[in-house]
Image (cartoon, rainbow, N blue to C red; front, side):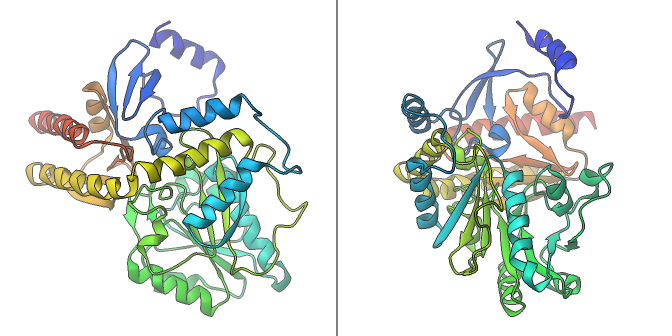
Length: 398
């Protein structure tokens, strides 16, 4: 079969919910992937940031193979050894916590919303303040939490109880407070929103505000979690600790898993038996894979490597900015980087793909460049050489 054969099957049998490139990937290793025709690409946006260790990391593959030979799934009303170990691992890597497991970032968002509403139910508080330009998933409640009208259009009426503040503007958050507010929910770095980084002042201010008003501070770490920023979790760049944290994407190293992480300082029992569930959540297979992700990060010293490679990538991107006026700004932390352009970014993504580099465009003019934590200097050099050619050719045409 070739790419056109696959596209024909898609047109007939798959709902067209994605804007798809004419590219069928069939193999991956580290930061390299191959399409159905054998062409090799350098992947600098692996799996929508899911493959934080790169594709098919040996530690993860070994864990999946081992667990697949024992047991794949058990119901969550029985004890699950791997799930227990993973909950302990997450708590020890972050803050004293208890964990609920699900299958995706959107499900983790749903769990966080339900947690906040149940937490505030006795006092009649249910409103959650989220940020404009945020992104929290594609379920009905998650798109309502997302502060972007474009993802909500056509799905009205939306669930009530969400208010939107300006990111990095504490006064804006205060203006949205009502006697019904129970939580503030945000990403430490807005990913889909354009790699917008929260300031220390903003995060510290939110922690003070939520403490003063007896609100939950909930952080969406679906994209920033698991080492992407050079810390295991994005909040660790700040002098705060959240009450609630959501995880997914790189947590499973390529297999679907999400998590709601609740700080033990939240003393109230909120999600009790019968109030929430996920049939597949944290089953032995995905929990084993996730445990392997933690091991790989430690054994490979990938947090310090991410800091080093992130700084190197930033320097190379700054070199591009100096050369090409179309690049307005270099943004990001660790290996969560972006180029903000003066014009639409889609042609640059297409140009890079034609030359063997996979990146992403969000918010029309933001090129997201988020390689795996195992990326090398040589691969960064190759990627930025390709980008240089793409920008040079685009400049020549303009």
